[in-house]
Length: 302
Image (cartoon, rainbow, N blue to C red):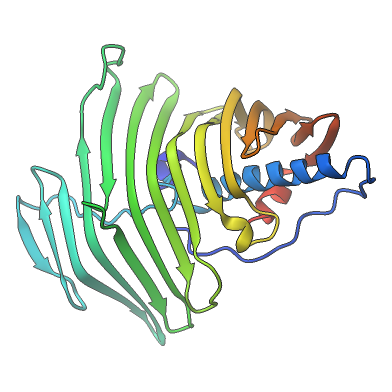
């Protein structure tokens, strides 16, 4: 799992209930609600980071640009529509570009429409390091999102949109790689075959950072976003939240959780403190606490 690999599409979220963690008394019911809400947001982030191939990535983003083409080349997509790519500006424009994959009786069709711009920007300030590369990825243009629809012969039908900017950097380390991604904008996805509400994520300078080394990796998330995932998966994140990572969430080479701490500020100014203890997440608020494994948190939104 890496932010450098998180540039794919999370197709949908099935409803699973909140993992039972014991009964609550009347006196601490309010604290329990706060902890459940906090767990829903931590679970949402854990699901995004594990299921996508963008955290940042692009945390539900597309990786559709075609490299290696000459400037301003327009080609026909294999099943209809066109794609035009300008290598000098990094701008790719899709016009109902349809691709189709067939294997035996199985057919998968994807349709992309809109603009994607991916370009290297150079160092944004005087504090940059020589071994870091900086980029700006833009999905959508002039208020019009990039859209993608996937449908297959098994009945899947998912449509997603991105009106999103991603400022990201990649740093080469002596023993690994560091990825940082700052997201601004709106991502939606809807499972039209199943019906139900549209998943909507609104990012506001939301920063995801990861460091990968031979001994493991660490993750940080800072900044605000809004989600309606709880309307799709009860127990998942719903509403607005701000994250502040005080100690990076650390995993060892076998993916075991070993350290980390962060604070969540919920929409009504309630605070949930999260720390790693003995391989699980401990959530605390106003004297009440709950413990969740990584799997339990992901199940809230999977």
